[in-house]
Image (cartoon, rainbow over all chains, first blue to last red; front, side, top):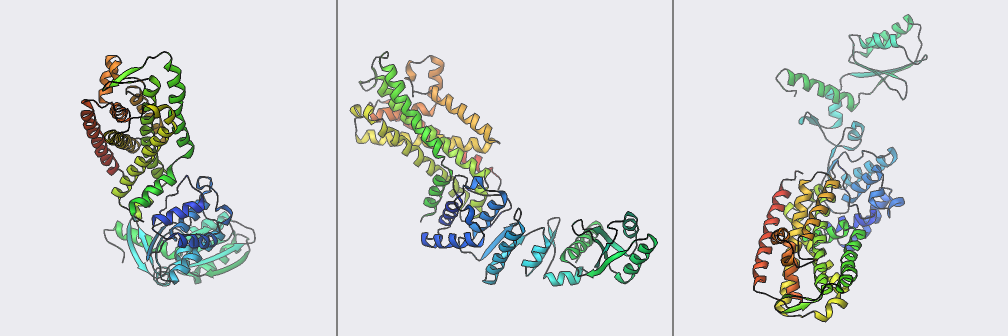
Length: 243
Length: 254
């Protein structure tokens, strides 16, 4: 198990810490040496393999914590938010390594709030709301069953418009409205994109704005998750349960 | 490798602070070679029991060896403290170990550190102690018993403290203060029987008094009829403290 909380032996360096962890799990010395070299490569820890664990950054320590667990053999592994604090490149290589291990037969219970990770990695996803599993299914089925709303994304030549934001937020066809600060695109979640898109153009005309790009994006797992949790919340509030 | 051996080895490797260990060994040697010889000129030799008369430096040297059992005890509390602080406590219990195996491994590691530290100090102090060392089987057993039970008591005491106290600073302050009291109300530096009555009373409850007295009796073949009683009291105190440590430990929520 890799817990969410940090765990490390403070008096040791990375390599010795991994070796001692292997010893605890009764892995023979030669095998420990082989696996340590292999894992240090997979988790890109060459630069700090001799560094004391107390001097590691949060991300480096996290990498050590996850890598260390693969020193010993297992059939089942629990990972509680293992990618917190990792940069995107390392995060992807860690996820790829996990995927490879799953392909080799390891079963992993992976807890995360990052739904892209869950979609990338998991064969089956259990959605937990307020400590209760509300749905278990494949990512595709969850999106199909609970992601009925589509996302319409568009950009304005003028960048932003508070009038446009205000009008769309209060539109009856729009279930969610937001703006991605990174790309500058507005994102409208709706079950009726065919009526929302003309509405966006009408509003742009009226406000003297120009729509520079617009498209309907695929339903994401996040959309499905939000719909599912919202539905479950309503059901619980009404004394029942979402199915 | 056996589960306990693996855990004990891990506890010693991962949690033993080499710098503090160095000072823990140097500290008693200063008592032996500086304070002992310094006071030898003004303190006349005196009887310690069974007709055995020793110089002050010899008396103190034996006391300084037992001082290391306190240091071993502090290490036990520190081990548990660091494991909790650094998340290894939970990690180990989620692994192939039970909480009983974990706590026993800390006690075993403490015994090894305490007894090894005492033997090391004894070896360094041998030029002082050697001439008066009167080895007998009975004495050897008394020495082993004193070091074992003393380390057990102080290890368990430090474990209980580290569970009860919430911050590492508080743990350091309280344990240092407590061990300071144990040290100066024991017979490490002076014969408790010759001290003022409040100190005598305190020394009667102090396990370090018994550890030191039994160790001296074994070392110098100065066994008196009270040694068996002292051994019994020390064993009871160590057992009670061990139970307290286990109860405190079981209160930790993982």
